[in-house]
Length: 445
Ligand code: UDX
Image (cartoon, rainbow, N blue to C red; front, side):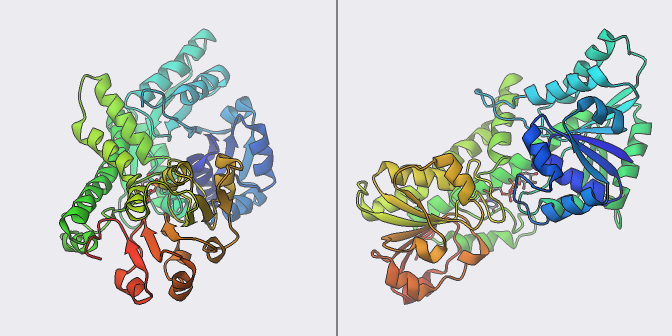
């Protein structure tokens, strides 16, 4: 098939590369000319395992092209995906300006029947708005004769595993209007290579598909915030949340995934989608109590590591130096959006401390955010970050942080303190090297 994808962010690029790799011809459009030029050269703006190789391979095979010309692109693809950003507006709602701008553009240049698929996570009712925006433009050009079907097909990929998730989805949700059986057939054909072995396609109405994406992300965020609440209780009640986690996760009704306590969730999805769901609820005069609490708990959770530092070393941290391992909001990405590490860095710098930071992938991005901020030093390795440090703070569970040289830690850290924001260390192993572990919800240690 010939496909067009508007937006070369995480979702757009990964989708484009994976669909091209399945044998389709895909063109990606973006308004950012520099980004498109780079992509043509094989320079990928984000770090995502396997993505660059996939893009280059499919570009070289002539299946994947990049363009800034919407007319050419709308002409090219029989299916047009909208995968542009939906940033958070001031009131927490998703800002649809980019999505609706693409819709209007499609309507202005469309010359043939088209299926338009919303891939971005968009509030319930957006597909209707997209359809209305395209039809408005078609009507103004006297092209109401063209057939248009707008489908909601949310994306469930995780950063750091985006290519694999997209290649092996656990479900493919299609929100299709009544009477859209031809559209359903076309999309089933498109997704057939990803729908082998067992049926993964779930067809529903458009609004349910839009709400499904929010329900999925907000339920996952709820699990995390709930576990963080239990961790904070464990800290105060003298229990170890890691034992509690094992004790409850073995119940298949609860499951072992997404119950890892930590320094709060970050990234481009959970925080934004939780706020958007709250805003959607309020928009229909409904108070989404649980989701509001999830958001509040997460805001507070991002401060827990700093609070632990203050309770050990006092509020005045002038003259103190902290090694900080991990900046990205999670491993295998360079994404710093809403990363808990930012709250810790801001708090430490405000309290007068020096931060010696290291991350395998996110240092450039972090440097861009902090732009030479005094007190923040970027180090070439995790070991270098330890030089002259009073304590170590771990904010991302990168593999290479999981088995550190404990003797080196013991010898380097003046206060022999390790603040573990992801609960990756074993308190007794650290204790054997004279180190004190301050984890999340591990009062027992
Ligand atoms: C998430 C969803 O998982 C994905 O399905 C959706 O399409 C986009 O949003 P992503 O944001 O890439 O993906 O990362 P994810 O692995 O889900 O982690 C999100 C955050 O939750 C991270 O900050 C992570 O550290 C945190 N987390 C995750 C926990 O604190 N505890 C857990 O048990 C799991």
